[in-house]
Length: 583
Image (cartoon, rainbow, N blue to C red):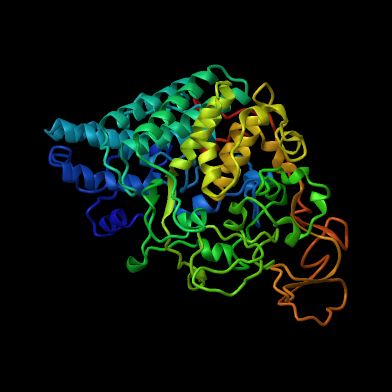
């Protein structure tokens, strides 16, 4: 939670508007509030709009708790496991078919005219329209077509039962809201307050999603949105004054393992604070055996390049390398995202190995983790970035690559800044397109639907996005827009073990894990795992760790890129709402 807004809310400064479903759009606020006596000055607009931050923006667990093909947890989400069914009623949390935040936003827009100062009114109208755009973007990602509501509805209003509007109308309405926000929000940077630059970052994200979704799903007007993405991303990069954080020997790690968001790179963040007991759970999520045991999938560990810039998957026997060998001389972001040999906790000099009881794949996550003392449940307080300039670099590069207008100069000002931050060689456009990565382009764990003259660089940008944005809440939506949901059906694999016995995973001379069958052997290992019971290997007594191997996962191309609308909501609309295809 953002401390400023939560404290004000708890203190009673903000009034409660109630929890509404789709059929609740006609309800009036529950608190004693009249537009004739409120919304008359900047302070009242600010206090009212603080609730939007809590209503609309994702919480920490929505960001670090992502689950697609890159991070494997237990249990899997219903989306990834293929176990979704049509719900009877709308969920009360998240971006399900839930409309209460929208009513609050529209209520401000209808009543802000009580403020005489036009500049102030436009600023808070811009803020409200930013949040309306965010709200509708997340809903469009889930459901596609939607009813567009831009005013407060009364109980007799016939629009309560309107059908869904077209995807074109929703997308263009989101862009209009964002353009108004960009024109009227402050330019002053603030990592905890929405400003002009935040609105531009959201426009960049939204336009890339819509352009690539249309491109890969063969819908019209894809290039229109890709061009919008390229233009707004370039403007933000040129005028926003943001740059990559490069301080210290591990700047990528330190950007996230930091109690305060670094405004040099972070455009907007969730604010957490130890002194105010505002915590989240990322370190317990990464360092306990009861919170899903998250780990990077082996297929995605393979994405990380060698420090020379060579592809790991071009090496002989890359698919039979054990952990110590496979982590040598890799992109430094791998060692700043998971425990690799030589890893130490912040504030300690003791070498610490991956703990296979904390990670189902063995690739033990460290991103966001600070000192070990914060591993206890509910004790993490690092700010969580929601938008940062690195994503905008990636958006610009991808949009222009799909448009086939990307140049080497574009790469030098985007992707290569990210690579150079961690000491990686630059990406060469001509070389990438002349020699597309066969691993990323194949059908087993890659993207065979990427074609054309820019195939090679598109694949390299996807590699970079995966590595750079790991655990930042974007991967599932990326897979949906890339039309790559079938990857959820592929086996989820972890570390490779070529035999049973003792393993020194951090290469410090002591045994970290013992794998055995039958009788537990004598060993100094700190972790014992019985093969076939505690851990499954792909070849019986050797091979990759297999996760969820007993679960048949099905992703239906004709259905699963959108969510089903709850049955109750369709019935309440007098069936003017039409269910998404094949649900």
